[in-house]
Length: 399
Image 1 (tube, rainbow, N blue to C red):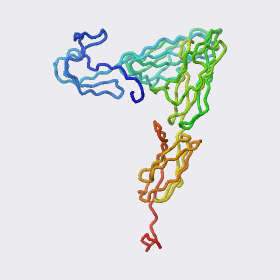
Image 2: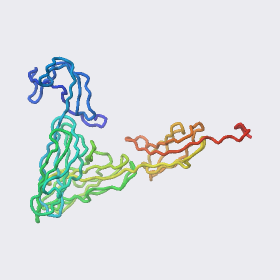
Image 3: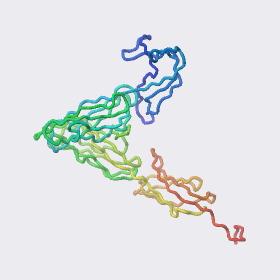
Image 4: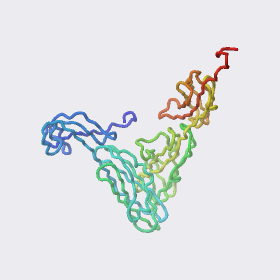
């Protein structure tokens, strides 16, 4: 967490006593430590389970073997809470997004495993986006959940948001209530939804995308802030998305008017790079969330020729790399490392001399964008064959 610039987590005593008569007296919700030495702790990868040895005889009820070395297992079982989600009135056939917040209660890591909608009108609700699924919440942390409501008929529309998680009391059932009427008071809409970018070169600067926020109701809409959140399964906001222009934050949007937020996408890694745009506003069921979607292209390389004799030269071509960045190519025991600069389209071409002493067989080259973490790398394979045999009677010397 320190390496990721995240704050330290709260601590919890893994070997608490069953008694509360120690001195000084503990707080009302605390307890004493064990009455003898505990040692050799082993913690699970997610921090949810601790095993340890102890000679204490007051860690479990009715420990009858006295101060004998025993092995204990402590499992932390946190739980989730959330406020009900009550949508305001909209027309049948329209849709709106509202959100509630999952709050971690207790101590220990809690993994959100799934979120589903159940109940009489479940078909009229959907979780969008699922930015909490796959997240590991620690003590004091929370995660917003966004639900889309699209009523199919007039009247109250009831359902439940079921959140399954690794902890105590799963699943959490959050009541969801919406109402449909022919004359609704107001609706807030986002266009487009989601904001999707085309596949881009890693570390490239691309044309920005705009999100238009429209107040289609009859009351003023106040937007306090706009920010980027991590997507499902991530622990911190990605650096792929930057808000480059924000006409919405700290603004009041009159009925019928709109404002615009501009987002720049520059993939910092290869593959899909999802995130969430969060709007903190005074509309019901806020904050409101919008999916951000983009992908970083996997760079590629190839040798020409791909089969080369030891001591000869081959050409290596690369494409799809970070534009204008230095790239270092390495083929261990085959050639010296070479650093090349990509052009504005992320391409390069370079020649490589193959050591005369190279062991014949298949070898792999790896090209890595310099001075960037996490690593952006592409690979290519080549086959090295031995030098041709000298003509008979020459002993390999000059003729």
